[in-house]
Amino acid sequence: MISVVLPTLNAERTLTRTLAALVPGTVEGVVREVIIVDGGSDDATAEIADLSGADFLISSQGRGAQLAKGGASARSEWLLFLHADTVLSPGWDQEVATFINRVESGDLPLCAAAFRFALNDFGVMPRLLEMIVSLRCAILRLPYGDQGLLIHRQHYRRIGGFRPLPLMEDVDLVRRIGWRNLTFFRTVAVTSAARYKEEGYLRRVLRNLTCLSLYFLRVPPKTLVRIYG
Image (cartoon, rainbow, N blue to C red; front, side):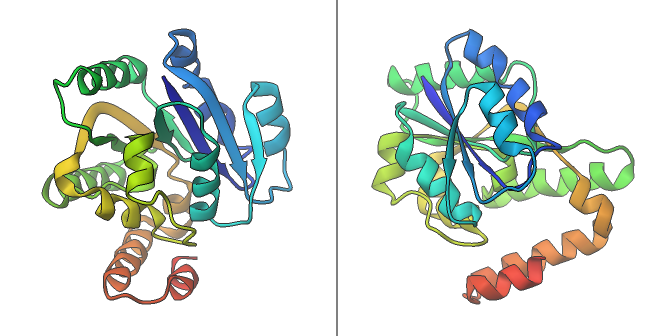
C-alpha cells in the first residue's frame, strides 16, 4: 500500500525507534517497503538498516536530494516521507489505511496528508511550541517534514517531487501541493527535541522562523543552511 522513505545521516540514536513504530503497519499490510536513503553516515545507521530489512540507498548529502532519490526508487502507489528522528504514534497505520481507502473510493479528492506535531520532551516550552505548530498548520496549512507527508505517487510526480534543496525542501513541496490539497491526520508524529534542548527552545525557534522568512524572501538555500546550523 505505501512505501516509507527515510533520509538519514548519523541517525543511530533515533532510527531504531522510528523503524519500530512502522512494524504494526508492516504486519497489517499497510507498509510494503521501507527505503532508507543515507547521506554518508559514519555511525551504525547502515547496520541498523540492514537488521531491519529496509532497502538501503546511498545519496549525496542533503535531505532534499535524499528524499528525491527515495521517492524515485519507491514502488508503491502511496509514498510516506518521514524523518529518521520521528516516531509515529500507535494507530497511525489504521488512520492512513482509512484515508487511502477513502481517496481510492472517490470519497475524498486526491490529496496529501501530514501528521500532528509533538516533541518527546516535558515542560512548558515543548507544549507551547506544539501549540504554535498547530496554529501554523491550521492557518497556513504548512506542515514541516518532521510531521511526515503521505502522498500518492502520481500526484507526487505530477508536481515535480522533492527538489534537491539543502534546506526548506519540505516547504517547497508543500507549497506546490497547495493548501486545498492537504489534510491533517489526528495521529501524532513525535519528533526528537534534541536540537531544541541543545540550543535552547527560544533560540532554535527564532532561527527556524528566520530561515522560513528568508526562504520566502528568496534568499539562496546555501545561505539558509549556514543560518540554520
